[in-house]
Image 1 (cartoon, rainbow, N blue to C red):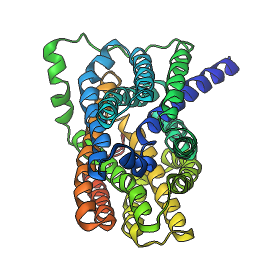
Image 2: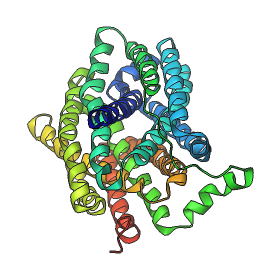
Image 3: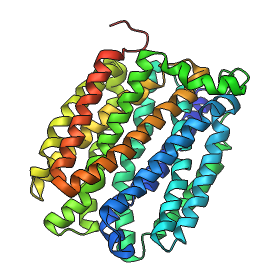
Image 4: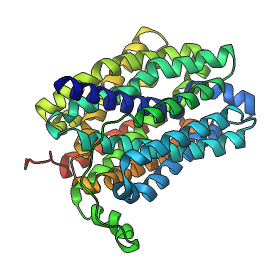
Length: 395
């Protein structure tokens, strides 16, 4: 029995890892390729930034629309739907020919990405106790950073050898394979959600937002996600313009970040379970503001790689702690809706922040972008400190 239970746990965790790996590579593989895409399509960096804002807005809107439905009709069912949708969109992207086709497909990919993220976090909360959830979440979220180690450098290498579109064909196959894996999940039953009427559907999010800790948690996600994508989106063009670097060279920086975070993610989960998720988030997120401010001061080489390594460690520690805590803020029957609300604010933060950063980058350079990212990071820590407590504790 113990072996069978262990095998089931491995199957679930490995599949959830793969789902987030797919969503992350799909979302971020274009980042190191932005200079190349600008030349191919003849558009500016500000125009290319809409690829990420469009994705984020679509992910936010679709997550909010589906949140109550995911709770009512089953998270595993919607996870399969999201994987099939992601596979189809990736295949269509492989055949795209111009910028506006790519933009429309990135918006569609945002629909699938929002669904995958919501279902993955909700299932993690359903299947594992809060006392050990940090360790499980740490492993699942390490897929974000595995994507930086494998997916992003592979995308840059593939773009140089063949075409950036080729990687989307591979992602399509991965999405279909993961969808098949979900049919081998063990049978489980989450706490059933009450019958859903139009009135109860429309009242779901207002009811959740009546709680101060819930409002603060989603505002924290707005700032955290916006800060991260702000400095990541514009660093390839900054490195290309400042040091003349090409996508494959830039991908080594992402590789360094991925290695750091992949090493830190399991440890961050253990520390979150040991010292509380709240304390780990506050420490890591507040520290992060310092290296962000120094990022544009570093020359290309060892010091920049070391600083990016530190940034990645902080991001890994804060992300595991924050997402684990958020899965426990509401009752199980509302978990999908709350995660959808969290993801909606997270993607809205990305969209707003990337657009603001585009203006700052054009007028003030990359230093303006990193200052904006640091400001959002400090804002997130302050809100979280004043309004969010560890679930089950009264600090």
